Image (cartoon, rainbow, N blue to C red):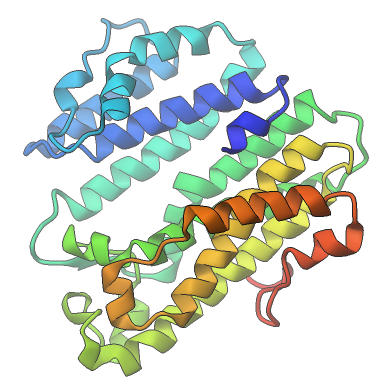
Amino acid sequence: MTLRILPRAVRPQIGVAYLLARTTDTIADSDLDALPARLRGLADLRSRIMGAASPELNLVRLSPGNTTAPERMLLDRAEETLRFFNGLAEEDKRLIREVLSAIISGQELDLKRFGLGDPNLRALETEAELDDYTYRVAGCVGEFWTKMCRAHLFPEARLDDAQLLANGIRFGKGLQLVNILRDLPADLRKGRCYLPKEKLEPAGLLPAVLLSPANEAKFLPLYHRHLDAAESHLAAGWAYTNALPFGQVRVRLACAWPILIGRKTIERLRAAQVLDLQRGVKIPRSEVRGILARSLLAYFVPGAWQKLFSATGKAVASSGK
């Protein structure tokens, strides 16, 4: 959705980075029995991305039984994606290699940490581990996006680059944290818990019974504090969006849409009880279309635009790191 609206000057670079990231994600999510096969597939693809000369990849062998047709096509056509990547300018390839290196390191760390869905649930140990993970798989994307757009779209604009990069990183972390909190039940079924032990244990919670209705009174306050953190990151993303040059309509909309959808998701998660979370919380397509339409109508009306994201007292761009 966001790729389609991006200016042509950055759409190929960001598009191919997205395809390669989706390819590595599909490998990491393979349901092969052997963990080494997944790690080897990631290592082989990373080697090619980094420019090593090696035999053509055969990633279809990693295709899990529940892989969708587009995902199988992504694995089957990995060489085509790499050829497109290799045709980009050297500086663009450098930025893509930088972000893919971080993403793959996060995927490898995740596989080594959680294994193949061990029935004995494993949780992250600390908030620092959670923050590191959200940076590796998403915060680095905000950093990459900022550098790519800056170089190709508004190189001469007078901006606070340090603040822009910091908020771009938080933007990515916020989107990933929303995904983690939304997907908590599915991850628990896979044997992984991203809510860290250092927060669970003082509350008297264990990953295996985290979503038991009997623990709802203990679980929801902790869950809501993580929602607060996600919302604070998205508020930083909104500040990031509004710091971009006003004339960069396409880029600002491409940033605004996932932020507004993410915040709507947080609202739904905040209102949910444990049983609602177990059933799954999703934003209907009709609401997504409504968000897109309202943003287009409000763009040139500053007051209306700012009202699209009205942060809570806790979700201010200056809070959190």
